Image 1: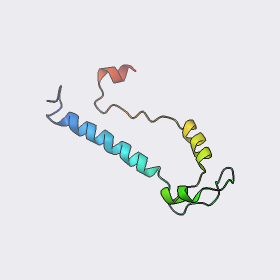
Image 2: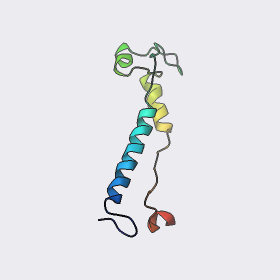
Image 3: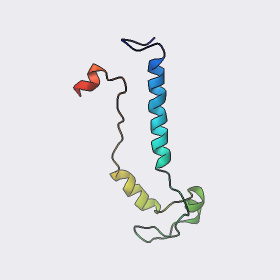
Length: 88
């Protein structure tokens, strides 16, 4: 049951849409193309197993870990526009 002015099933549609957006964002960040044999940041060799497991990889594990630490967290947004979300 949806609340307010929304029709029945609208809450589930909003949840599904939010999940689909997150999946599209994650897929867009996956590497593409040929893997590099050496890291583009530190020039260390990228292990063959990593290149096979992750086609298109451009960084060694250490540099990828550092990049992941610096990433900002994607928080998304509240599609329902509830009063609580407007107060934050």
